[in-house]
Length: 310
Picture (cartoon, rainbow, N blue to C red):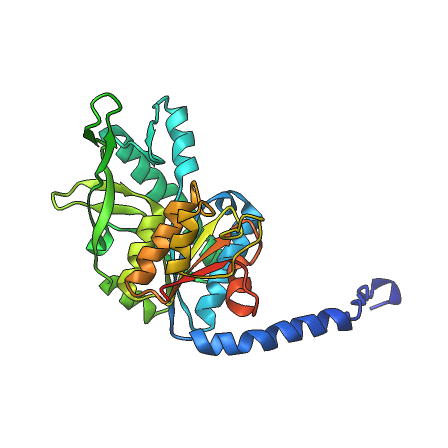
């Protein structure tokens, strides 16, 4: 081979010592947490803006795979409200909401199941598989995983002051979870990705709020952590600062004095229900922050608000 035909020489830039030191320090800090959580089960409720951002979605998938590789058993539960809403709009089906819950009639439940158990579920499965994991998609109907009943809501009639039962259609709440199939996955390389659809005693399909669904799964498997990925950094005090660690009693006090309000109330109530049923702790995190789960697990300062029973 002549000199003219010799392949070009590529010279890689030297590693930045400062950057290498930061990486080494991060790994060193993470090691105790890896040991602490090895063999534990983490339930991650995934949704919100992070689901719609391709870069964040792939980072999330890689983080889930990493958890599995270091000996943690991750279970992913996902939502999909915005995606359902967009498809219903395209099909010119009007949605109504009561207390933030989509009224789900017989026509709508078919679309809800198609979007949640179909398109969204398989997208997340593909992301995890592309990141080097082995994901399996399922819903609460698979393996009779989640039994549900019709969710009942009441409202006071402003004229008569009488409580009136509201009909939400096929909106359900879980009343029984069989963790057997999830225990089987925990002993394998499989990462379950679950759509929040439940089955009724007469074969009905129920649309279940993803937060509620994730909390029920976490309680049933005795999870060490329930991670709720939201659009905020956690529970904030009245000055806008993140509260890092709260007991159930402190959460109730914050609800009472108005610090926790609006859409944050049902999320913290899900966390409280989970920890009261045996989950070691529940954490509210900002899903728009890259690697937010890893920052919460593997750094001393954490990244969200941790809620525990005591």
